[in-house]
Length: 443
Image 1 (cartoon, rainbow, N blue to C red):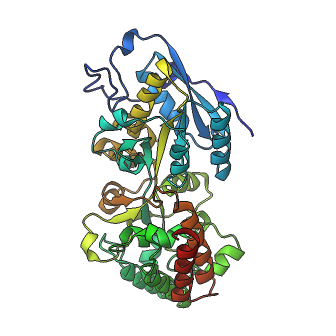
Image 2 (image 1 turned 45 degrees about the vertical axis):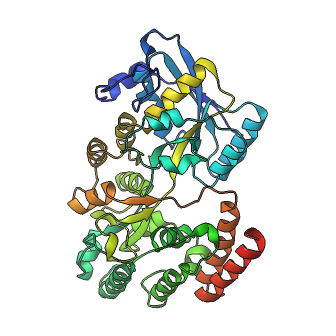
Image 3 (image 1 turned 90 degrees about the horizontal axis):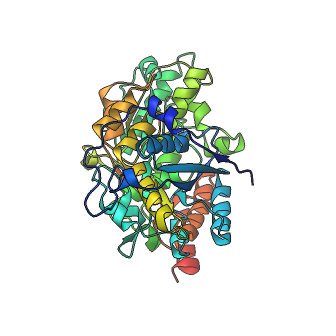
């Protein structure tokens, strides 16, 4: 495992970051607040805590969080411990926690593994921290088990439509207006494909990546009465029927082509091979960087709310995305524990949110200041619909915090491949998945 410890430079960070005044500060009880401050901070002895991150050279959010925190908390030093990215992160973290060598604070990349950490007794109860967070911090409830909170979010991704304004104009198709259902999205993709067929561009109307979440995540979040853990998954069928029809009429590149040729959504949308795609908010930072470097074409683009199940939710569009949270190693105690609580409280708050938004990361805290920081990024679309899509939505978790979640997701992953490749019809594929869920998991 490649790993290194990075020391941060609070003095440099203090000069570089624009930090708002600490309204509210500490309270008389000595507990932390949403800005990560605690009573007695000025007189406290220096404390050093460790904090896990991954791929530090290409993932600046960890250093950004630490620099912003240290600028406001000079008595605490946070040392970042680098872990590998991808699935190896959780494997290494679980091993280090069991061996007593894990950092004091560690990110929970998604909810799929949260249950494993909590059930294994590897997380401190941070209900006191969560209780002080404001309503602007989304995703907190996802970390509650049996009435106690075991992590707090610092990042909350959500899925949107990304669309190429230039290709819409070339095809003569109206751009999204924020009211689209999935049927509207499919109709627009077909109209775009037909409209672009007479131009020089090879673009299709839309691109759908191979991940099961691109379809199942929306279906579970939006379908009325959907109960993922029950294994009653009939609600997936119409979503699959629609996307297969889009493949058949040429609005989408086929799933087989995507997987066989290892197509990436970055190249498909960024080099104008598709006029629109649905993808997570993390892609904003990537697209900005790739347009700046020349890896993506230079074109006008925007984001719109994800297509909806029906028109009843267009005022508060329903989308999905797991929060990314911070938990505290249950082996931490004393001054280090208090310092760790101050750090995770800060990470969830508005100041950290502004710092993260300034590098293109979608923070858990959603406020006007955070939105303004995000849309001050060079190259960001400034239209009203993009700002609405970024700031207004009902984000529902992709994963359910339960011991059976991972096994059920694996079954649905098999069904997704089978249906999308044409090996089974949507109804037959989902019927088989429900049978397996009943026999293998919910028995």
